[in-house]
Length: 582
Image 1: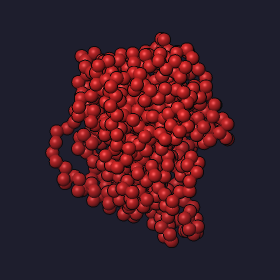
Image 2: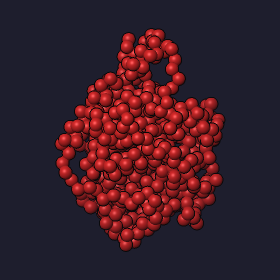
Image 3: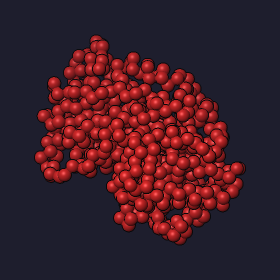
Image 4: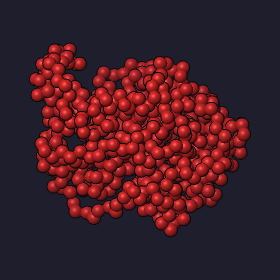
């Protein structure tokens, strides 16, 4: 791996913090920390490994999963050209380096992200490599250490990049069940889908001094809220004050702190029987039946799309999904379900109006229903924060999911949100960690979970309710890693390219059905759901029953295993060969 060679040395460097001119060799000896102001410069993954692991112990894991360009994505450049440029400039095969090593004599598996590679974005290949590192830790019965540096999910891979949040999270869950330590070290910057999944759902979360972490970036928050941000917002010290990290560590102390944590947890770990392993990767894509009557094909694209509604232009579908008259969760609770009893509050001091949930009946069977609530009028939309859940909303949903598991109730989620709340208070209250905990919990919830994308499925805020055994999607709904406007603003010259971005993101139900992100498309009346809500409710009720009833007969252990297999298949070697969209 060529990336382990030192990068070309420069004689002098200028500090980004205090603008001091620094002798490069002195800066390197100081671990790339400015001796004048303490600014921690960003490190590439190879240099990070050299600083942390014992000399001679590093063993790199294979880093070349099959190529994946599942969407044939083109903005101002084709996606493969961006990958080629990133590989040439960094010497890395992808945006993460995975290895086994020892730290102070303690064996670990490591996954170290590199921000230089397309902003450390989380795509199918990165998710696959980190998941393999976690599976290696499980095989070797060693702790997993993650070093994160990322701007978020990789837009060029659309909803498939979003799926990696669940894929890696369930690998973390398997380590948690096995009693193996997981540690994440947040470095600058860690945002978006990485922050809202594996960066914050480990046992221990450390932040390197100077790191910034959050679900939404400062620029996005300022644009959406129009508010000035407090000094030090989203910095390591901010995170520590708001209870979102275990500690803030100077770079010179990071190795010693990891050694102490590894030693303490190793000494205190009780003996316990290993968790049953999943089948080897070569077998995970087989049809899974187990005598429970629930068969799941290897590749949903191979099932065919007979009966799938005709494809509408992607931008027209986005506007349809956002129509103010489109039925909301409360509408469906009134028309699809019976006897809904709403449950309120996260038990930590708040009740988010953007999330509604409670017990209801579906064809006489009690279920727990949880969904995003927007509204139809301006007043309703404002009161419900446009369906954008706060951390208290995600924690309310989490409380209801866990209650459902204790009561033996299936969970039905209705997803309709442009994304999670990106406000200052949401970041102060731990938005990323709240989403991450929901995702992780859903991967191990021992009760059937059925999700429906009813309108907008936006980013991690949608995935927080959509890690399910079966994912359905209404014909005119959308599901994406980012809004078309946001994607256009980042990858095109201006936001006017939103219609083009919508088409490139492959965010419509038929596209996502072919990619395997959703299992079934629920057709709407010939006009749209908002023109005939009663007929839409009738079709949704039939689809819910057809998909939920087979799940009720599956033993919990098999149910969880199949759910994990569903999301495990989104690795690069699963999606790279798909040609359904070409």
